[in-house]
Length: 129
Image 1 (cartoon, rainbow, N blue to C red):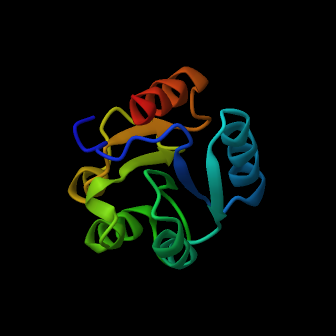
Image 2 (image 1 turned 90 degrees about the horizontal axis):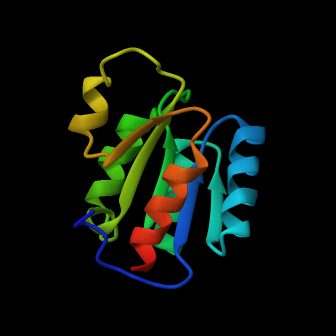
């Protein structure tokens, strides 16, 4: 978690998923944990929102049409806020190996859907530390 340099009591979180229900449910959960949350339903929308929000945490769906999560993460890392953000890949991928592009894109964590609440709480605690 050494990338988590920007500590705040109210973390800024960007949720990115083309599944509207999944994105909105996760955003609601994050707001219960006292986060400032924005939701994007595509990679390109996430990049635009990221510039304004400058998120500390991005929870990013892996398999999206158009720009997939790996491409979105690579582009996020190129933004001024990107190197300092914690980027979490959230996938339905349950195979033994993590897809190579997740690591190559610079994502910090990989979780399968649905994201475990305890994992989310741990990441938020590190952001607030």
